[in-house]
Length: 128
Image (tube, rainbow, N blue to C red; front, top):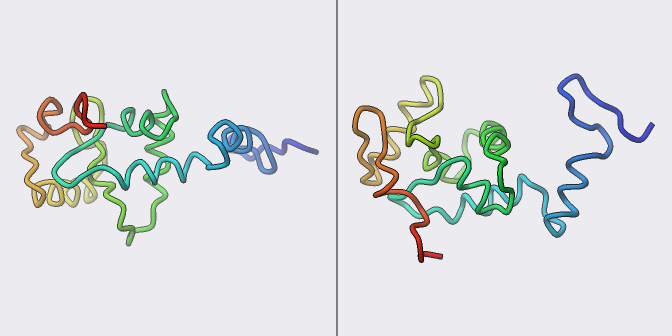
């Protein structure tokens, strides 16, 4: 059987991941997301959808969230710089407090739990 499906709907042997690899020139979606995330500078933030676009995966904000959720705890990738489209943290506690501390340590100000995306979003027009 070519397309075995697990309970969560992911293909076990081929399917979307393999197709995605072809579309993205040999890099799988996870690699593309991680490479894009590594480029986000200190003191700046990106939305899940913005990171998906930077990775060449438009309309894949949920995939970005799923990918970030699977990162190892000791990752050096700046996962804390990724926010939802409203500039808010989407993580449950205690992760949310850890994310707030990391953002604040980079000089990012949260007002009523929200980051001003007009000011802190990366990239701004003309930056890339």
